[in-house]
Image (cartoon, rainbow, N blue to C red; front, side, top):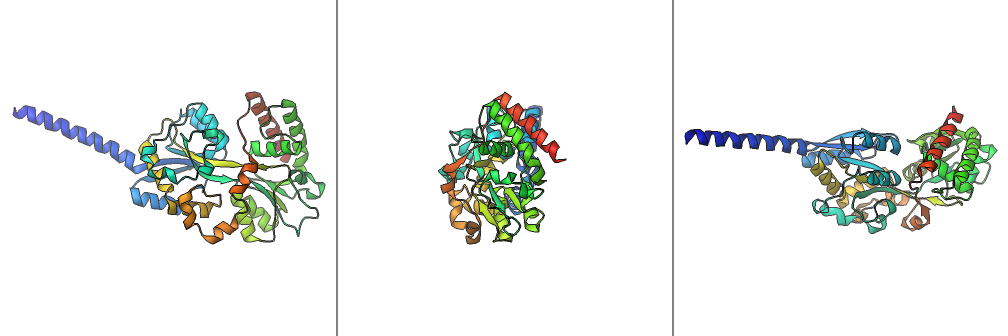
Length: 348
């Protein structure tokens, strides 16, 4: 009897030790994968202090780099990813994204429905919107002799070696398609070929091709015109209110960066805790007021600083006018890759 009790006690202790070890791993780590400096440090610090969970922040440079990593790890390694809509749709279709357990996200109802139900997650099963935005053209009227009205203006010979654009393949090939009267998402290969030929003619005007801090080149005067993300537009105008903003006549683009949990996330519970945390109204306001994108959290609206709201040059009223970039056929995708590679080579 004594021996049996000792065996039973030892078994219980082993189970408790195993449970404790698993709990520690789950409670202490969250592997977050997104662009550099995209989640404010003070938000991460507050989450860590509140939960005891350490956030391991890893960054990528492009959506395509993120997808390749996710494919190689079969949806593992990371607990949360923040990426762009069209690439999330591809990841979902490939089975690399988990459905959210909304019972573990009490603040899920704080999401403004305006930012839900889009093509990449029509039933709101997989994602939490993080940063909706519309890229625009900004220029310094003191350095530009022409009236800039849209994407086509970027090709003007007077802008030689003075334009900065984002290093985002489908956006740049997309705005070129727009100048030719096509959709971002056309499947017409001849139209994409024509856009490729035209894009090469833009190369002499490009001085800066950059994903990060492109507005700094405009602020410093190194470039006179820039095609910028929403956040960069706001920062540029803060530095110089005399800059002019252009809503391109060819049509606006619209996009949403969103959070999702990969299919084999090692710390799924911690991922749900982080999602619930950032959907708190005050935390949501803290995020949006630092990254300068539209705020998708309706509980945060009352906490948004007045100067932040004034700094944004877009509103929810602009959304219906914007066109999403979406996944296209493998043939069209290959052609986009080919022409963008040729364009970048022409810049060297």
